[in-house]
Image 1 (tube, helix red, strand yellow):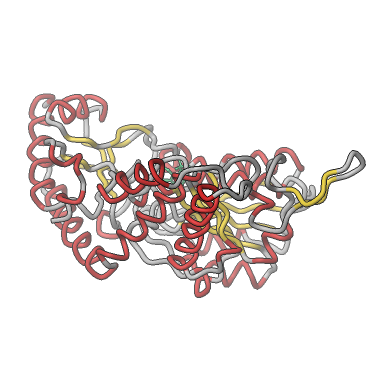
Image 2 (cartoon, rainbow, N blue to C red):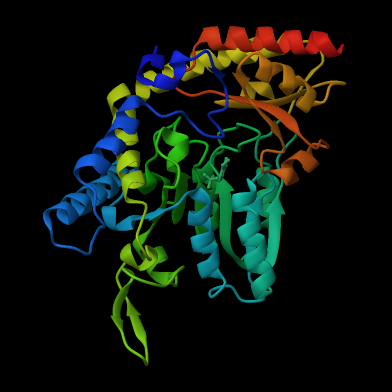
Length: 393
Ligand code: PMP
């Protein structure tokens, strides 16, 4: 029903790859182009009319993000994506971690929330630890409790894994981590377009997401942080806009968020993200969640009926995305036929090798939905998938 808001669906695509990136509503595409045509200049630097328009639009986008996740605008840092936001924090921890410290991440993390922490540990001598998931894909909380220790300085977890699709009980582990004095960074790259977020209630120390996964442009992401957690972090990059006073002897830095936004930021992209959040607010969370639940339940029901399907984790625990294999057929082969049928899904390790290894597989085929998908898309996908299976069996 929302397909009409997305011009790309004038063509015959069956787009089931929103976990990789969402399509953009016309309001975002036109809004970004309007911004370039009527209000564009660099931000924070000039005092001409256009510079003021651009700065006002950029800072209004920051306020929209803050309102969207129930934060203060001073706690919102624009980055180029979730990956850069996590690297910003992990890079800061290279100056915070000591050899006896520990970092704890879930085995199901996307490489973006795994490798930066692993490398920060390698650089500092801190211990990099993982906690497991159960066979159904849910967190193994007993293992989490076992791995969490008084030495843990930071816990890094996704709210929804991009392979398992389970909505994880982040509040529970934030409480446990805080009891022993560890900070928690929550990667909401996969949940941001599907569930409302309230960082104040969640009480996380840091939270990240990418604009392109919530109907916004590429090249824009968000890092939220508690004020003290952001103040504790050293700057990530150095250059224009992030300084207070520069002298030959020393440089002092601007307050947060400018301290973390060196150089010309992704201005139009931030404006586009603000418009994407306006679009979500306009459609409404109740409608989005109710519609997506129906379409996703239908997808799972149809997939379960396929003989030889092997889900990664329990299909009944998933939401928004599902990864699976068909016994005896390489997912790349299936995808060749699906692509010919104009079906867009994702095949591979989905930038999450450790969780595939955990399940004893190398890759999977992943289908994921957005607010524009309907049951007709699912029917077309299942038809194409059955055709592909028939070709190889
Ligand atoms: N975390 C998760 C769970 C993801 O799914 C992704 C993207 N697939 C990322 C982080 C990284 O996002 P980006 O590539 O937009 O930086």
